[in-house]
Length: 161
Image (cartoon, rainbow, N blue to C red; front, top):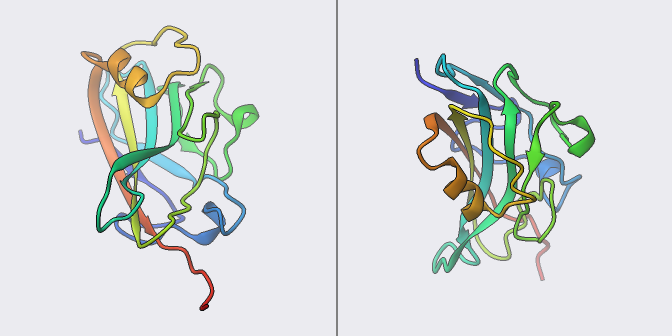
């Protein structure tokens, strides 16, 4: 089986709706997954933007959301998922705003790509105490059974000056 990650908010390669961005309510999109390997114990989710600050001259990958130890029996996350609404046992890492939780697209210039990456893991990770993306990736090393990606794009609507 192949792990598949989808959302009703946008299709792969489509535009992230403004309600899920800094120009809207800044709520996370709903996410649904299927095809997890049989030995999956937990899941991890990382949402990032490799086009920061400018897609024409990217300098870094900006991290928007870090979750781990999502129970394998979970089929997805609802739109607007917050710490209190996450599946029991799910732990949060810190994003590049230096806080936990979802931070939606808010590109300073141009159209950016936002990658929602789901990892099926063969274990429950220890409490990493609000890990960064690199710390979570290091902890996952050797434990990834499968993964899926959903990419959406966004460019600020802005106003003509």
